[in-house]
Image (cartoon, rainbow, N blue to C red; front, side, top):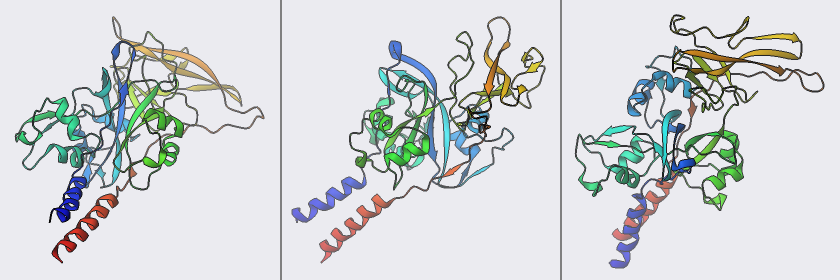
Amino acid sequence: MAARLLPFLLLLFLLHQPAFAANFTCRAPGGAARCQSLVGYTARNDTNLAKIMTLFQIRSFRSLLAANGLPLFTPPSRPVPAGSTLRIRLSCSCSAGRGASAHRPLYRIAPGDGLDSIARNVFNGLISYQEITAANNISDPNLIQIGQEIYIPLPCSCDKVEGEPVVHYAHVVTSGSTVSAIAAEFGAKEETLLNLNGISDPESLEVGQVLDVPLRACSSSIGSASVDSGLLVSNGTYILTANNCVLCSCSSSSWELDCHPTRGISSSVCPVATCGNLSLGNSSSSTACESTTCNYAGYTNSTNFDILTSLTTQSLCDSAGTPLPQPSDGFSLRVEARSSSSFLRLSVALAMVLLGWSS
């Protein structure tokens, strides 16, 4: 009897293994830092943008739209089908060598909730129940109370990668994924992904594992004296800055930050931003292969609110005089159906054990 019971207990143990811990390292100078980071959230059921905003306690709806390259006029009721993946922008706080979302989101425990189900089913396996337990100083995970509010420490980082500033993106591995495919999808180097996540064997990648994926950020003309001097924008996203007066987007066509006055914001609120006779974000061409642009250079807010600008000249042709591809904007919701093949394999094995038990 004991011999037959052992594999059954083993299978039960495997079926209830916690979500993978996502220990994103952050060794910023001084031991602490703040930055903007991203996590990839895959909806388990049909939902909409408003509900996702509430779940992650995103303070500005525009922030959710910006992280996904969606137009500013997109309504909160826009559907998000099950299996769709959204990028969630969060404020990252790094301390003692690790990064976690700064004090948010908070989750109120409902009837039937357990910390493991909250980690897996509510927050898509981006964290483990052990991380929730540690962050909330919960001595016994089985003794949580309905209505209790807990902090969900989503993984993030502010570290440079290979000496370059990046936007860190928490990506949950899906069935059939490989390190090389993930690297290609997000424009990262396979070796960089392996080193950053402490993976020695690319074949050891597992479904549900949370990877720290460094997204290349566009370069900019923002000066060190600007309030938003550390602004980083990754490909396919945009950010509202300068008190929402300026919209800056990033495209892999140029890898240069493209900033314009935000449409729909009252001109009485936002100061005029120009470079002489050229408005912010506009360009003029002296030749067919050369363009001068009025770029965003930051803003000041100490005594007067001013938007800073600078003029830059860009070549529009290669050495042979052939026009270079121009930037394109936008980022669509990705449908990323997450397979439960590992669970099914374990379920089949469990069924076989039970059938053997009953024979």
